[in-house]
Image 1 (spheres, helix red, strand yellow):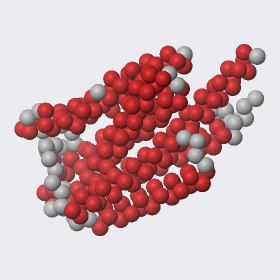
Image 2: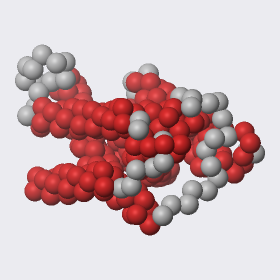
Image 3: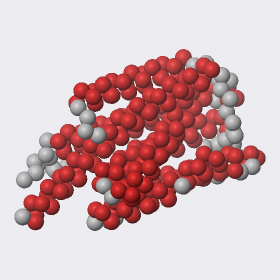
Image 4: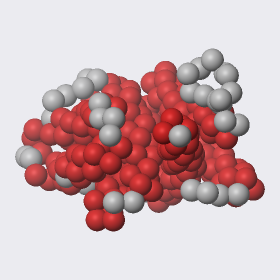
Length: 45
Length: 226
C-alpha cells in the first residue's frame, strides 16, 4: 500500500524541520552568549 | 522579534501540540484506494500544507522587501531575509515530498509540466537570492539589491499558482480543481495550522539570529574604527 513513500516523505519533513530548528536555536544561544561564529567556540574579544 | 523567553516557550509548545494533533489526524484519515496511492496519498496533507506555508513566507518576505525599499530601515531587510529563508526551507520540502507522492500515483517521479517547471524556477531563484546576498559586502547596497531581486523572484508566485489554469489540462498531471470530502479537508486545514505555527517559530528565530549578527557586526566595526 505504498507505506514506504509515506514514511520517506514524513521522515524527510521531520528531519529537515527539526534540524533547521535545532540549528537556529543553537545559533541564537551562541550569539546571545557572545560567542564567535568561526566554530571554535572561543568567546569574542 | 524581540519576544520574552516565556512567549517563545508558549509558541514552541503550541506548534508541537498542533503538529502532534495534525499528525494524529493524518494517521486517522481514511486510506485512499490503491490507484489513488493508498497510504502514499497521506503525503498530500503535508505536501500541500508546506506549499501554502511557503507562499505565506514568500509573501511576507516580498512585502518586507517592498517596505525596505520605501523606508530603508535595516529591520525590514532582516525580516525579508528571515522569511525568505524559511520559505525556501518549505519550498524544498514541497520539492522532496512531491515526487514521493507522484511516483506511486502517477507512475513517475517528475514531469516537465508547467506547475513543476515554474515551481523549480521559484526554488532556484530563492537559492540564488541567498548566493547573491553573500556576494555583496556593503550592507546597504546588499539590502537594496536583494530587496529588488526578491520582489522580482516573487513575481513568479502567481504564475506557479495559476499554472494549472494558464496551460492546457492535457499538458499536466496536476488537476485544476481539487474537491475534498470534509474529513480530508479538516485534516488538511490542521496540517496548514500546524505548519504555519512552525513557520512563525522558525521565522522568529531566524530573525533573532539575523538581528544578533547585525548587532555583532556593528560592534566589531565600532571597535575597529576606535
